[in-house]
Length: 127
Image (cartoon, rainbow, N blue to C red):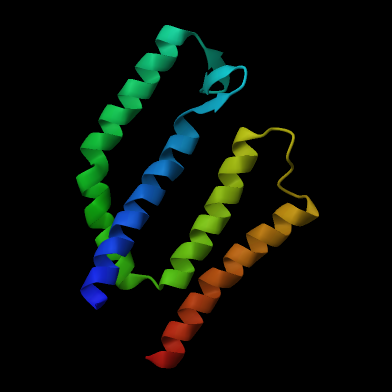
């Protein structure tokens, strides 16, 4: 059962890492395709999308192996906390009207940090 959970957790983590990386490469909006801080023409958008897909496709086996190592070394709760922080950061990166310092944003950042610490505390207590 533990092997199954580790394998599935590895696949989930791999997908999350790839999704996280694409959040920095490009965003799509109702107005178009944005990469590098500016809107792109259709042919540029297709090239960027295909390039990202190709590079990340080639890197997927490496990311998958990295995910296996992370799953074995880092508590699941801590991994989730890191992704809460990362997701909040990516959303703020893509939605310029949102402030990183709003009360809601800070609560999300602190909740993620709490989960990171909690994961390690639980691991150290049960070890």
